Image 1 (cartoon, protein in one colour):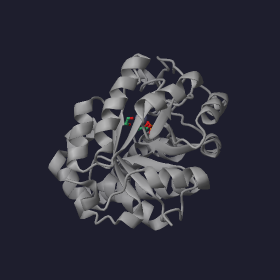
Image 2: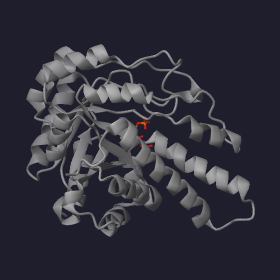
Image 3: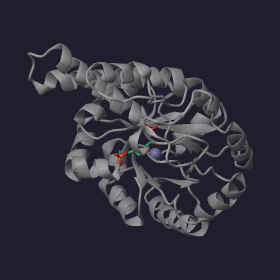
Length: 315
Ligand code: G3H
Ligand code: 13P
Ligand code: ZN
């Protein structure tokens, strides 16, 4: 299927608009009807462009037909500036599959490969995707992964600003994910003093002026959700995210796509835990799933307004 048949857009126009008007397009991950609906409704409420991000494991969880059926069911219009994006595609084949399903944007994540192999893979994906007007994101530098037992077990390997121009020229990608100190998951920083490496971001942005840069692992980990989860039986001690003011600074320095997954996971879990704990008589899943969905909806609206600066940017 062609993504245009689903009313989706690629990222070309939104990214160039985001760069000139200094906002970030939010890329929120989804994996079921509740998460998808919450994100699309929040984007509609705020008139914000949005990228609906699907990891390979989320794609497997939903199933291809159900996923695309849900996208169709959202009745998306091109003027809403909604992209469907493969998050962390692990191979050329995974990107091809997503493009054939109707995705309008794919990430090929070769960030763990040596430079030349990463560039070669991204170039191959770019050549294929661009035939269908699909946008391509690749990554240079690696983010630390989700830590085991709440400890920082891995170190980030920052993007080398000296590599970026060469990488973009070889690959012909449409956006570049960079590593400046963010990491995936809910345990991003050992202390509140840790800051993103804005010096690296500035060097990258001046080497690649007017080129869309992407921040992964950028959840702010709202403490209200962490506290609610812990209060009602969870155990997420020392969960810490990227402070909103640092994310806003990143947006001013050419970050024009910000990836958020963990915040929605926390929002969903907090709503479900609180509802089950405070209303022990209920057993209709719609009651607690709806509470989780409302939390995601509210949090997406809040992040669109306070971090992304993308409200009212669809026109
Ligand atoms: O960056 C990774 C995303 O948070 C997706 O994670 O593969 O568990 O869906 P997942
Ligand atoms: P978080 O774990 O910080 O939400 O990062 C999400 C992400 O980068 C998805 O690609
Ligand atoms: Zn990511």
